[in-house]
Length: 68
Image (cartoon, rainbow, N blue to C red; front, side, top):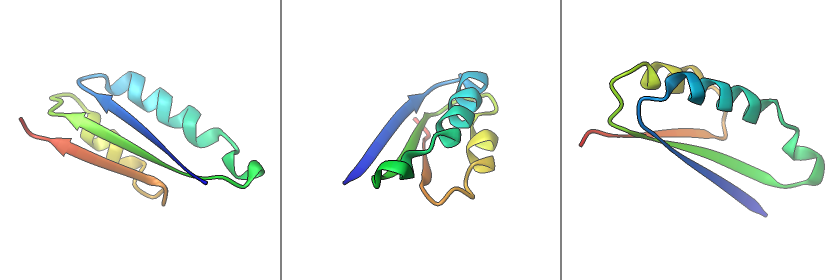
């Protein structure tokens, strides 16, 4: 079973960083589920994009930036 977690954010980089750290510290594989985390950046003007880029090495992570 694939679990998709979608997080929308706007100028909450500190909270986003904390959430991502906690999310990726979880052991989801223990129950055999696969997951993906999608962050939708709603045209933030803070450090949201660089934070998302720093988590790009996780194969289960994607970020989408809306520019409007």
